Amino acid sequence: MAEKKKFQAIKGTRDLLPPETELWNRVEQTAREVFGTFGFGEIRPPIFEPTELFARAVGADTDVVSKEMYSFEDHPPEIAKPRLMGDYDGYVLVVNNLMASGAVPKTKENLRAIAQFEIFWRVFSESHTDVDSLLKAAYYAREIQLGPEVALRPEATASVCRAYIEHGMHALPQPVKLYYTGPMFRRERPQKGRYRQFYQIGAEVLEMVPPNQDPAKNIGKDAAVDAEVIEMVMAFFARLGLEGVKLEINSIGDRECRPKYVELLRAELLKVKDKLGPDSQRRIETNPLRVLDSKLESEQGIIAGLPKIADHLCANCAEQYAEVKRQLGMRGVAYAENSRLVRGLDYYMRTTFEITARGLGSQNAVCGGGRYDGLVELLGGPPTKGIGFAIGEDRLILSLQEAEKGGTAQGRDVFVAWMGEKAQATAIAAAQKLRAAGFRVELPPVEQKFGKALGQADKLGARYALILGDDEIATGQWTVKTLADGSQAKMSEAEFLEFLGKSKPLSS
Ligand code: AMP
Image 1 (cartoon, rainbow, N blue to C red):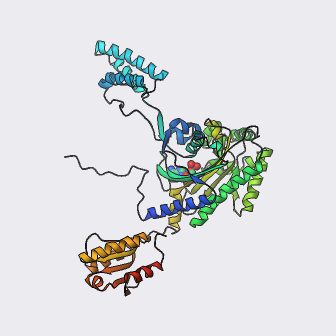
Image 2 (image 1 turned 30 degrees about the horizontal axis):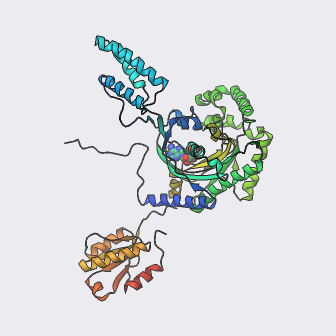
Image 3 (image 1 turned 90 degrees about the vertical axis):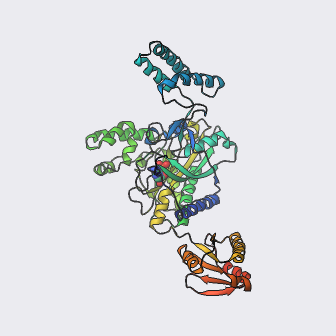
C-alpha cells in the first residue's frame, strides 16, 4: 500500500475559504461595478505567456524576471526530457522525428546540439568506458529546446499590451480601457502580505498615437486621463470603506529629462558612496533611481539631501505634472507628493503613484501605478500611450479585515427543519422557491429531530428556521422561528413568502 502522505499547500500559496471568499467576491464585484461606471471592460488573458514577453516588458534585470519567475519549457506532449542518461539515444531519435514534423522547433541551436550529441554519443558507444564523452553527450541532449520557455505571469500589464497588439485594438475607438482580476506568481520570500501566488486587480488605458502626432502634445489630455484613472481607484477604495488610504504621486520625467537627472543623481551618490549600504552602492551603477526606494535606516538622511526629480523635469513633464495635480484637485482627490516614488524601468514615464492603507505593517502598499507610453511599441506594436495600476487584492482584503469591514459570517436566511416523508416533499418545494427568490437556504439531506435541527440552524447563523412536521403539513400552517429572539409564529406558505420578502436576502 502506498505510504500515507499529508499534502499541504505549497509555501507562499494558500487556500481561500468561506466565509472569507465572500469578501473576495464582494471586492471583485465592487471593482467590476466601479470600473464599469468609468467605461472599462474586462480582459482575461492567459495565466502563462512566453517568458520573453515578461523579460521585455518588466525588464530582464529586475528581480521579478531574473529571480522570481516560475518558468518552464513547454514541450510537445509526445516527449519529455529523459531522466536516465542511457535513454538519451532514443530520445534524440524521437526529437529528430518531431523536428521533421514541426512539433519541436528546428532552430540553429537545436540542430547544433543534436549534431554535437551524435558526435559524443558515437565516441562513447564505441568505447563504452569514455565517461567524459557520455557526459558531453548528455549535456548536448539536455541543451535541446523542446519548445518555447513560458512563465506563469508575474504581473498582467505585459499581457494586456500583448493582447492590444495581437487583436489590433488600435483600430477600436481609442482609448481602450481594460481591467483584469486574477492570480500572479512571484517566487518571493513569503511573509504577511507577501505571497508567491497573490491576486491583483488592475486596469490599463491604452491609446494609439496617430501618425504625425507629436506624442509630447496633448499634455492636458494625458493629465486628465491619469487623474481619472487615479480617481477611479480611489472611488473603488471609498466604496469598499477601506481605511487610512493615502495616495502619493510623483513625476519621473521622460526620455528627455530623466537621463540627465539620473546622471546628476549618480554623480551626487558617488560623492557619498562610502556611507551607503552594499545594495545602494551597486545601484549607483545599475539603477541609481532605485536608491531612492531604499528603506535602510542609515541611508534616509542622505537620501533626503539628494536632488529631487521634480526640480529637474523638462518643460513638457513639468507642465503635465502640474496639470495632473490640478486635475486631481478638480476631482476632489487628496494626494501627497513623494519625490522618492520611482519606477526602475525605462519606459515608465511622468506620472507614478502608490496607495497605502492601514493595518498592513511594512507591506502597506495596496496599489502601484504609472504611465508607460513606450511599452506597446517596445513589444512590437504601434506608438501607444498607456497608463495603468495594479492593486494587491490580498493586502486590500487584509486591510478590510483588520478594520472589520470584512463581514465574515456567511449565514443562511432559512434553515428548513423537516420530519417525515410528506414534510420532505414540502421542504424541497419550499427550498426551491426560496432559492429562486435569492435566499440562502439550508435543507438537511435527512430528517433530524427538531431540537438537533434548531441547534444546527443556530450554528450556521440562520435567521429563520422553517419547521415542517406532520402538523404543519396537515394544517398548511407552517411554523417559523426567528432565531435571534426565539419567537415563533404560524403562517401559510404565502404569508411566509410575504414575511421573508419584507427582509433582504443575505446575499444581496
Ligand atoms: P507591482 O506589480 O509590483 O507594482 O505590485 C502592485 C501591488 O501588488 C503591490 O502594491 C502589492 O499590493 C501587490 N503585490 C506585489 N507583490 C505581491 C506579493 N508577492 N504578495 C502580495 N501582494 C503583492
